[in-house]
Image (cartoon, rainbow, N blue to C red; front, side):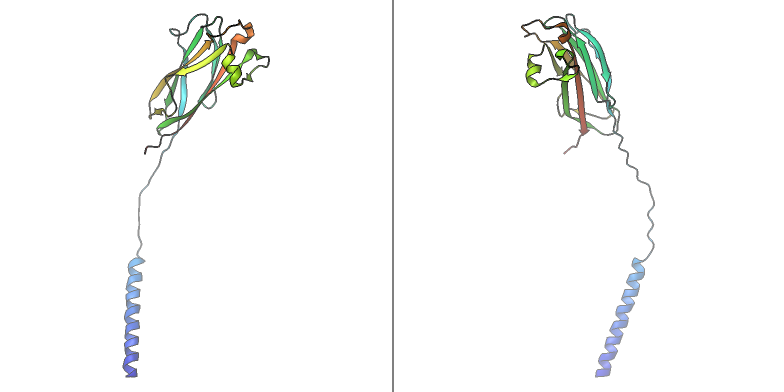
Amino acid sequence: MKQKEKNMVIVSLLVLTLIMIVGYSAFNANLKIRGVARVSTRWNVMITQIDVNKAETTGEGVSKATTLGESGLSAVFESSLTSPGDTVTYDVTIENKGEIEAKLDDMILEQKNIGTGVPGEKLTPEQIASNPIVYSYKGIEKDDVLPVSEQKTFQVVVQYNPNAHNQPLPEQMKSSLVMTLSYVQNVKG
């Protein structure tokens, strides 16, 4: 009986080895996958145009200059105003020339008053509220989506504070505003 058991073990091991050889051969075959996948993610959101809207500019408001920042998402607006209520209205066009839908994450308006005694000095919120020149914008809000190949025009308004009670010095009526837009990829979901 011992000889029969040994033969059974040997046959079982041979069968198991044969199964392993066939399995190894089947899984060791060369698998060739051919093809090319390319992902294009060109990001190109920028301010493309800034114009003075003469129809909405009132009184003696004068645009001295507008400068587009290197990033294409910032601009400096320099204005000179004479009387309370005078305004300069700028039409700002932003365009998505990339391949990814964009969403406005943040819009920072930083007022710099040339007439504060220190050129380009940043003002505190209290100084801005009492400043003779105030700024506002319309036609754009946080989380606005800018689809691919589309543009949006919004307005930036520079105004001589209509609530100003004292006539400021002439140098206080020259001011600049730095606007910075921050766009991120619009994630749907």
